[in-house]
View 1: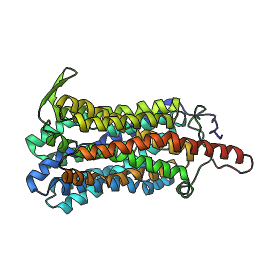
View 2 (view 1 turned 90 degrees about the vertical axis):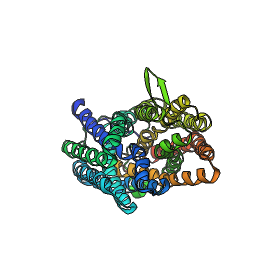
View 3 (view 1 turned 120 degrees about the vertical axis):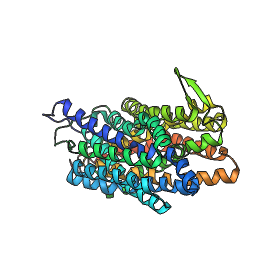
View 4 (view 1 turned 45 degrees about the vertical axis):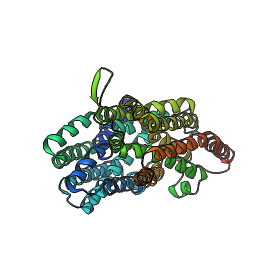
Length: 430
């Protein structure tokens, strides 16, 4: 097996923790573009009557541009550094929601989604890549904390956004939240930088490749495509819940029913959206930290199995408002960790030098999974309810859980054995 080597003269820990903090806050600022979207679907439909399925195409476009452009944006980061990419990402984020505020055609809505996805992807991919490079010794935790900013970043703004939509209209909400979020990202981008050689400490706990694989080599690797398929399987169910939670709550007739939990009383949908954002954020560093100690594949098996059970239970028992809140929380808790586990595993296997690009290639699986989100509306319309959608999503997660131990783990073991055997015969790149 081949490990990264320890480096002398590493900078004080405060330097990399500052970089991590900046990345986390940038992620918080783009979180509403995805996780706040569900709040705007019904108001837009009530004004223009385009139909939820047509409006949700914008969500798919957002996710596609947010994910499929990340490899190119990652290449720019690996070549020119993180600062400039995040700077322009923040500008695009503000422009996108400003367009949403005036969009009076579906095509304008779709254009804003493409611009917002491009900007969000630039910020997301750069922040994750920077964390992977700065924290080889705590890669799962660092990627998880960064991804948590995206997963939980909208938790504190769910109620303000709902309130502003009701008091000032969704148009003003798009405009002012968009401008504010974009400006914060632009300002923070000026603090970002990649670690210099020898500045980040090494890991001695987990298997990590000391060889840096180029993106073309990664695309020829079987491990990458196993990771990609697993990412799609798990990602599709979570994205369906993210985009469709408000319509599902409405169809289950629980959206406005008051629920009392944890000393709070809120309408079921508002409660679910708030707690889901928190749990979707907590799960990323939690399972990332767990994977740093018990291994990536073992953690995947536990999390994906829990997700399969949670999705099935939400579809079966979610007509009860209390259970809707609790089980939606389980679904988000067991889903969000993919955004720490997969990039960490990718960088463990393929090295640090091209980490942003390679993790970006894998992140495009989220875009592929997003293509399945509109099909959930089609399937629910064809069957008359959401039951079939939940069953399909649960099965997909169960398959991914089994594949983590039965397919991915043996492939990674063989990969590291091969590196160990060839290490003395083939020069390694640092």
